[in-house]
Image (cartoon, rainbow, N blue to C red):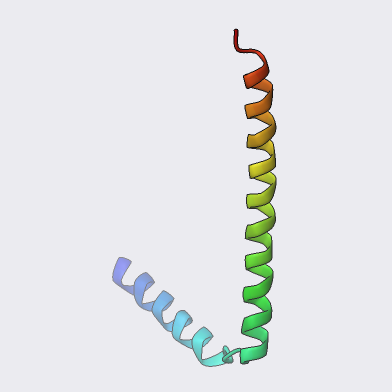
Amino acid sequence: MVLLLVQRKVVEMVQTMKLAKKTSKDDYFTHLRLVLLGMATVGGIAFVVKLIAEFITFGNRH
């Protein structure tokens, strides 16, 4: 029973891989640029939030 389910899933994965096409270099680099831009944006926002939090807590020290 379990072996049959695993075998069916493997067959489905192989069929999906046969239908998939390789992306072009241009599409790959566009996607990579968008991912890196998103990571830099999130990192920049986190840095600003951390910086503001440090200034707020620094002002409360006695």
